[in-house]
Length: 254
Length: 186
Image (tube, rainbow over all chains, first blue to last red; front, side, top):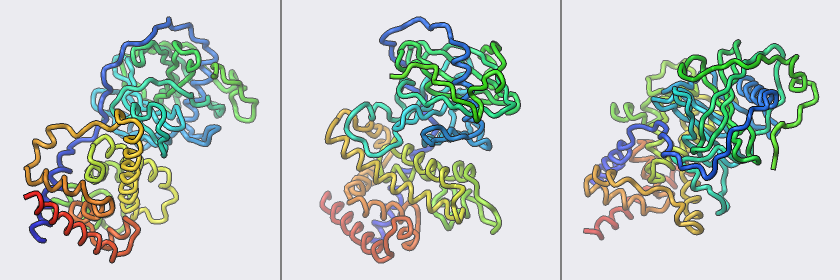
């Protein structure tokens, strides 16, 4: 018995010790897009409203209509090597070579993490299931870790809480998600030193809505063009402020 | 002991949460717990679910659950025990999900173990690990918690929510089973 116990300890240790690192794996190479549709001009105010709502939810940790929070722990650094936590259940370490991490709960059953590289490109790097049980339908297995996943699906409802006094600067960039064009909108919240960004998928009208959000510290991606388009305040968008009538979602819903 | 501390294994050996000796008044933090014990938890999970992707997902779930409950923890010093229980339970759910998936869509099975894993293990170890994998789920949990996590019978009982007597008898049956299986293969 003693021999067996000793052998067990050695064998289990040998197997466990093969796991030497658990950083997120980069996504597999993107598949060619099935179709490409030119990126339309951003409806500035609509996107601004949604982005502003997202960043407010991120920074304020306010619960959305479905009761889920967007949370990035302020004490956890989302830069490379840091840690990010999403309320939907994603916890991960940002791998070296990536400047930021995107966490999102685009669907009640999935949590998607997207990464943004310093050159401004972005890609979905990881997604995972969070709910149980699996009903035997759908692409659940395709959402396993390390596989590419399109940032599509039921969008988080744009948040409607914008604390008074917060301001932001919208900037735009472009990126692709799985080879398809996507729009990246950034919103800087000066007093927090944070940038939020949101992607939308113009190639799919039903999913042409904000599908994920990114939180990063300022100046971590010097290669990303930042074009200030507009400064927003609560007074400029009163319908998004607490106590006011929420603005209907500017994006089509299926 | 040093090996156990270095690997983040063992609740009594590694201090409160961070793999450091406790001074008695340190307050564990979620971040400290994450950085100090994530790898060890992934290693624990991989011994229960076999593949690293599933193990990492199980651990993510465990940390996310802990994060959601962090402010309500009555005794933060027990966070590691809570986390370990979550990993064990999550591993069990993962295996159950996998069995269900296999029934419907074989192609959706998680990726197989990389070939180099086998190459890096001695033949005896491969044989023994295969025998451990063939154990009933509860026996496998007890074996891993006892011989890899170095937990006491009381700690294993606490983790699995069973009595110490059950832990003892389960471990005994597991060893008998392993012995029989290994003898039969020689």
